Image 1 (cartoon, one colour):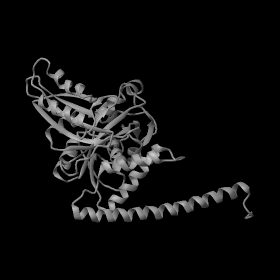
Image 2 (tube, rainbow, N blue to C red; image 1 turned 90 degrees about the horizontal axis):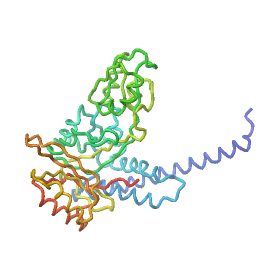
Image 3 (cartoon, rainbow, N blue to C red; image 1 turned 180 degrees about the vertical axis):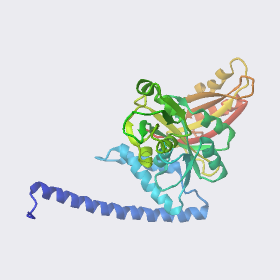
Length: 368
């Protein structure tokens, strides 16, 4: 009854007191960092420099990971410092970031993971709207899905890269955990399952086993499916736990994706020239769209400059040109930066072999 704490309680109290002290030290240091960031912002205003420099932020995080003495895990360094840099950036200007909405989508999670939470979110009804909003200046950046480890490329995103002027300035990937959500806490009475077509495809095995007779209804986004399921007890949605919390739904079945390692890769897009060209970081990707005249050996000739100059190709996708002539555009990701001599030489020879050649962007990629 109100006596002195025992030994264990006293030790715990002492540790908590030390943690409180460290937290205040951290807060003081973060405010000091924010003050320096404001000074940098003033200098940028005089020179017209960009507020957001993704390659600079990647360089900072790489340096911190390399210098990390532990016990903090290096994998924890990046999200912590992205939030710190996001808060400091917002003191200069909050970035407007478009993504496939509504709130609760994996695209929103990817945007927050890349930019941090100190942004103005611009949810869009479709991937087309993300491209249009970013192209028109309604948003500074867009976040679009480009590839899933289970279902492959997101065709609509690839097609829009060809027909809009946007450049890729970065990328991020997200572990995708699909959950069955609904107003009721059981599987009973479900008449339709709503989700984006990619999510329905990624969960088809589970759906066939547990809800074989239930309609699978595609919608524009998983979060939109969750919103609709919140309005109708006969509906269920496939979406994230974040979407479930947003719309007050039960997680009826967790992790129903067929591939336990399911990931989606997102591209970060912006208007050309909105950011200075990034310098080589040592772990860069260069993305291209090319086409060749339809003749024997044409595709082989595309690959020769890469082999000759030792440039690795990490992605090669084709999309029909819709010309009625069985012609294709090829989407290629290369390891490296045009500032590197062997990459520059390969790009020169590749351009000469192409009927159409467009560099979508060069940007640093995460090193896991």
